[in-house]
Length: 219
Image (cartoon, rainbow, N blue to C red; front, side, top):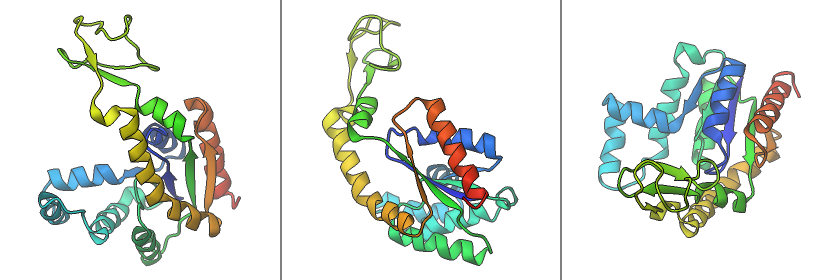
């Protein structure tokens, strides 16, 4: 079974991918991990990607596609994989189609974790950091005992620019612009299953697992 896991920042894709990996016994192939591994190990693809990154350029789609191809050709992916963070562009969608065809495999489905933007802003903009000891807090998930004060050292808590609501909304706008064509494409070809990601982690996990099992049973 080959699955794609789609979802905006703050949807909990990483957590859900790990749970699916455990339940379905499929490797979780995250594009971010592939980049880090190739750069760290200074592979041929990693060195190629570094040339673009050092110049501040985007890494071309064909380099990313090659990294994913190399990963899917490893023995642990023979029975399938959960793709996370790939594809991100229409060119990568086409590259994945060609890649799976070349490997004699097929895409079984796309799981899309849908979460309203305001809920994502609430989740992503709740992070605060202690100026002194750098202990992280979250206004919803791990608030300090006293607002604005670090439990560990009594230092002042502050919010990084990346975590401010206006920055989060800008990130989400870019995400929607990039991802909307992918969602539309996979919906049109009948591979997309949308799951409500606004609930608690266990509820979302159960819905994703049920959708994945329907895909293997021919829906």
